[in-house]
Length: 224
Length: 242
Ligand SMILES: Nc1ncnc2c1ncn2[C@@H]1O[C@H](COP(=O)(O)OP(=O)(O)OP(=O)(O)O)[C@@H](O)[C@H]1O
Ligand SMILES: [Mg+2]
Image 1 (cartoon, each protein chain N blue to C red):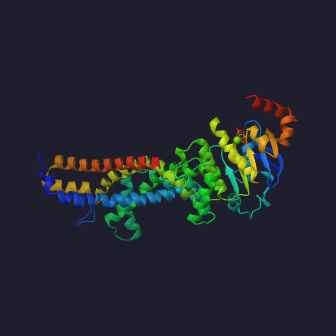
Image 2 (image 1 turned 120 degrees about the horizontal axis):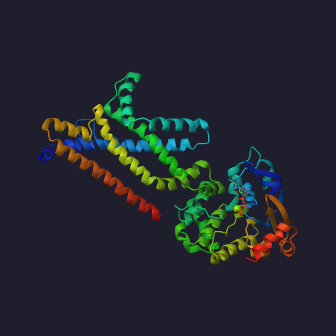
Image 3 (image 1 turned 120 degrees about the vertical axis):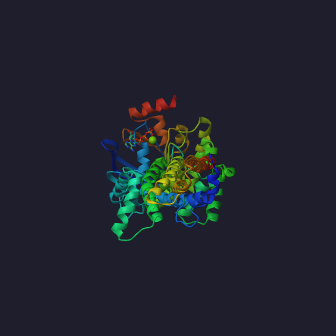
């Protein structure tokens, strides 16, 4: 047992692998955080789209959700990695491919969470808003979404934690995230036990932090 | 002010409004009563287009609801609606509940909207509750905020769907008092309620519904003294001996 390997590679593992600052275009957080934000934005449109009255909007949204929920994430990453550059005729960087794959894959799940959140707001709220002359968009923005978001928090955070951990799959296309960084160090120093225990603790701490923050957020919004 | 002409409505196969003819003049207070499921809620929900009708015609303030050029949002802005379950926005304070529509729909400045809201909260008897959230208000207080929210749009007519049915008995009075004041100020009102004391004191007419039809439409004195139909007699004896 020699945890010196962690100390010797501290910067490479955490600053490069976890955060993504360094010589390589990698980083778990640099992938996960934008993927969450963009994925949620996409999910918002998908969720609203699924509830749209017009079939021209709701059907494509439904097809999209069913399609991406039904395939493994690794497959989506491979598609984007092997097929997209060929279709577009340009070489794509790992970061772009990984981010696009995550956003589009997660958008399907997050869209379902958004849809359920919106549907959890009682009909009477919409009727009350409509009765005062508010339009559909105003009602959605000022009345429904604020309540829906609060109801979504638990499911949303669970999904964000899943996404955060799933970014380790990006290492299969050579993206230098925390998992890949540990692999590289291990190839050199052959300390699998120490290294994989260490990154497990790092993943767990991040996920636990997110879960605690969600709990705090829920409590704060509940009193308001 | 409100006119129903031969209105029919179905929910699927269920015929809920049958050949409704009803005229309500400016300043009238019409109480609608009748057994559960007789179509009272549906009737007033049709007035501001929360429910669509399948045949006949409804006009509010001279505007026909079936008119394709109708600005439904403008009509709703002028038609206040008070719900049995209050339907206050739980994430907003009483003040924010009231100023939302005046600011978004009428484009009032926050200052002007809050000034009006403060006056309305005083008018419904809870001037000190502006910053309270719905969850921290009693049922009676919530319903009065809901009334203030509707009044903030300066409606020409107010619709009430059993505004006191979800309230504890000791809070019914405060809401009815608020509604009585409103009627005294000349507001046109359609009130679905089983509060017969209110009907007796305030209503200009009582409409009795049964199985989707208007069975009686008379002055309250006549209605209470000698209801014409057997159904109304049964209904009254049940409700007055309760
Ligand atoms: N959205 C709906 N879909 C299908 N049926 C409905 C709907 N709303 C009401 N109904 C039915 O229409 C009939 C009339 O309902 P309505 O709510 O107007 O009655 P009501 O007189 O207000 O009764 P209550 O005193 O119980 O409030 C009832 O049989 C009810 O079950
Ligand atoms: Mg009803």
